Image 1 (cartoon, rainbow, N blue to C red):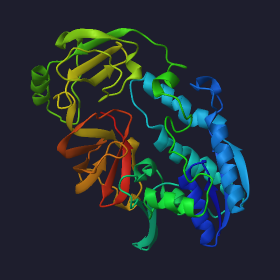
Image 2 (cartoon, rainbow, N blue to C red; image 1 turned 135 degrees about the vertical axis):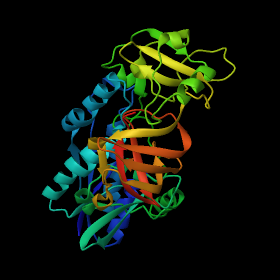
Image 3 (cartoon, one colour; image 1 turned 180 degrees about the vertical axis):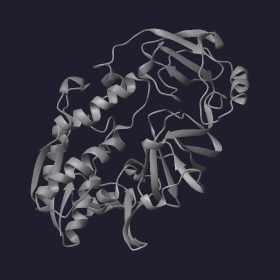
Length: 387
């Protein structure tokens, strides 16, 4: 089988290519160039060039064809512009999830098929299982065996058609095993550190990147007392709707440089000291440019027992598991961020939205992020958090 591997210049995709080669597949390596604006890089290095060179060295070492695919224009349109729009609107998008849905398993997959490939492979720590359900071929997206590196969350928006063509060669391995294999076969990337920073830029902090288009704007930081928050939370009639604060609910403790640069649950970067406990972001109001904060990770305004997802924003990796209006699914596990331990929850389908009710309160529920739900180790669906 001819399979195109997305060689990122890292050790994971390098070992993935080798494993496919050892399994007898015809392997082609392609490096995706997703970014071209080097004005936002914070040092003199050019990350994508370094990574592309490493990917080329790996392809040469394995003796497989290699090329660079420039998807930067499409990436800007589908991912980067969307990111700016979401942050400007006060939400917190996840570019890694979008990158997999819109680029790696869409644009990149199309390019691979044009080369006569039958599928694409990546270095994700996850697994795929194919079986028959009610006479239909069904693909299951499973967590990787390395629970510390499981990346199924980042793939929670994939469709059955995308999964059909997807291969995840290292999903059955742990990171130490991948490193060990890379050293044994002398891969040039064997000891390369894992990438840091944004998925498509490299060594740049998110606030630095956002300031390329979102102007700094001074505003007030309002602290909300825990007792007041506890009373307000108790008065809610719907736990899936967060409490929205007003300036007169608290008192000003400092200034920030733009509410859109922050996210709910954030601790670092608030730059207000002299408090018994650290301050956390409870809410950001971009229209009034206000940042509401509270002391301590257990502040009542920070914890949520439920969230909601608009019906049109829900995606079922397993369409056969989709809930009907009025139906609930209990004993599921949910994640609202990468590497978060599974959280027990019940999902209920209403006419206009889904409600996810957690067994234990959750901290830092941010609109715009993705919630992914699992049955055991299988990711069966996901959706954009509305509130």
